[in-house]
Every structure is written in C-alpha cells, then in structure tokens.
Image 1 (cartoon, helix red, strand yellow):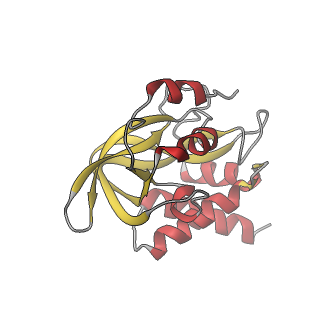
Image 2: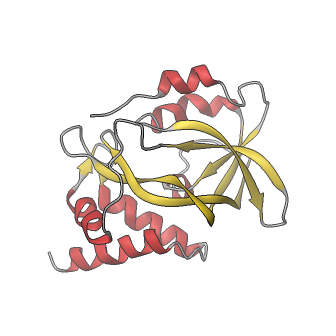
Length: 190
C-alpha cells in the first residue's frame, strides 16, 4: 500500500518563501536530478544513515510488489554524504510528485566541503509511513531488489546506479555498497 504525501508537503511549505534553497539528494537525486538547478555540490549531514528500508510502489515497484529504495534513518555519530542542489521553489511540484510515496520535506543542516553549514531541504520517509518496509538482511534486501520492477524501471538499476555514483564520489557507504555487491553476485548467478 502506498501513501501519497504530495498534499502534506505542499501544506508544510518549508522554504516556500525563499527565492533559492539547498536540496539534499542522497538516493537517485545523486545521479539523476531530473530538474533544473543553479548549482550542484557534494555535501554531508550528520546523525543520519542511508538505508534501503523504504518501499517504492510507484517508481521501482508496484502496489502489489514494491521495490526498495533508500531513505534516511537516525544514526547518531554517523555521516551521510550526498549531493546538494541549489534550486528555486519552482522544483517543488516535480519533487513532491517524485517523492510522493511516503517522503516528507524536512529541514536539515548540511555541511559543505569547505566547512560551511547551511539549512537545506531533504525528503525523508520514516517508519510511520504506509510504504515503510523496514530493516532486513543485506541478502534479503538484495534479493528483493533483484526481482522488483516498476514504471521507472528495474529496482536493480536504481541500486546499482546509486552504488556507482557513491563510488564515483569516493563515499564508503557500507550498507548501499554491500547491497550492490550482493545484488551483482545474484545477477551473475541468474
């Protein structure tokens, strides 16, 4: 079952009164923006980790067979590196639709490579949304991703593109890279 968060995000209105803002991309937004942006820079946030715990009923799976995509989970002491995009609020319609399956806008302090800290917007799906799949073993997550597919294509493409993008950024995300490595082994055995 999916949960459509478009209206909740529009009502929340975070940053709607700004001419420009920073958006934190930590999943497919790293390698496939799909919107116009003013600037793009690597950035990190603290106290969060990227995990394949969110269901995708609308992009990388279907309502009857959801895929798995990443979200952020609270992780004291950890750092999550992603990509910051300087955008205008004009991208909210696109982003609210793209992230509609359980993700809510959240204000998040981001640290740029030069040490500068600025609040930005992140879309985060938490355990209280209907599309939440939750924690599972690396083997189970990889097998789930191997077989899932939706309107945006095979779930495996999402996971492998994300892992490649993280490697290109020299980001040692143990969870995502372990899922991708196991997924590659499963695909090779097909």
